[in-house]
Length: 512
Ligand code: XMP
Image: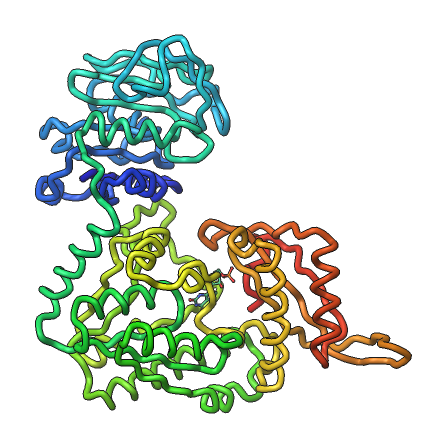
């Protein structure tokens, strides 16, 4: 396995994903992790990420010396390259010639790092983002590639198996980047690339059995991919020691609650408590219009109902959660200071302590794509695996203003027409999220010979890789016209349809 030391780059996670895609297990740790932990991890190689600091500053991060003492192969990327040079006797300077974005490197020498893809004399496209650059090599190193802004764009000490690149091989804008990383992990570090989802599944099942023993586990089920995969994996490991609780807040889309119940009870034969709490949630949301207020109420009720059901079951020793790797990576932060709360997300975070339960988190080593792959391995239907993300507070935050049963019914109809049309033209998987919002506005319309004065809805569809930023999906007008006409004709009570063309930022994906 490979250890990735994080120096705070925005794209460190991409390094891990590329490495894992090549079948090699890896973990991301902060650069200042202890020597002892590194030793115990037994990495076959170390990748040093980029980062926002400058090695020319006195207190900027350094590579733990144990990495070099162990004689491990090292690949330093951007800041990682600079730190390695600085620490091994080279020199780094601020450069006037900054490079950002697409650049080209001229390959001067052959290297194990680009065996089979790049060779001496070629010019190759890469993606750069740096201000500092290496100006003097440490002893033992040679230049194997140069770029206009970085005379030492790629350097290596083939004997000690130390490599440094000024560009970012982990991003897609470096077309052969994944191969370079694979050359490092497989070719240089000697990893075999046998880390597969089938292997992970067996390992994790053994691990769960060991952790849980004969004790009882409860798991909250939402219908989303993460909790579904966690539940099925747990069930394979411990069978009926697992009970799932599905708190149905009545704010799901058409048919979703029924799907959850059918999939888990019938297909997987998992003990499932389905608590229909629709009335309770609607009652508590009566008259509430403030978005944060709605979120807080839903979050609080969710936990209360979940706890009530857990107590009815006689409690349990473990609570299972579908926590993913991006939530547990110890991140390196150089910005400091509290960040503002844009929206309060809800989860059952505080519950384990209150109910004295221990946590079992079978997905905590996986990225989202890997969870999907594991879901396939476990036979989860493709419609669940590929489902767009859906917010915990459900349709309540897609109804600005007060939430009522009548509005929920209208919104469900609109939403299902929109999604049906998207599936029809084969665009569902190209879109990160697509949904409808019911606006607290009425507008005048004309239908047949009559005047209408009905509700307005907005459609939203975005592309994104992680939900942090998003672009509007560019439907063609013919498609939007068809959807709008179906909605107005088929959903009584809606007479106008708009398409939201705001990216994130400045908009958020959801309206509330
Ligand atoms: P925003 O609206 O903040 O959403 O751009 C980013 C992503 O998060 C989802 N979202 C939530 N997910 N609980 C969740 O589990 C929540 O309370 C919640 N609020 C927003 C949203 O759908 C989008 O994918």
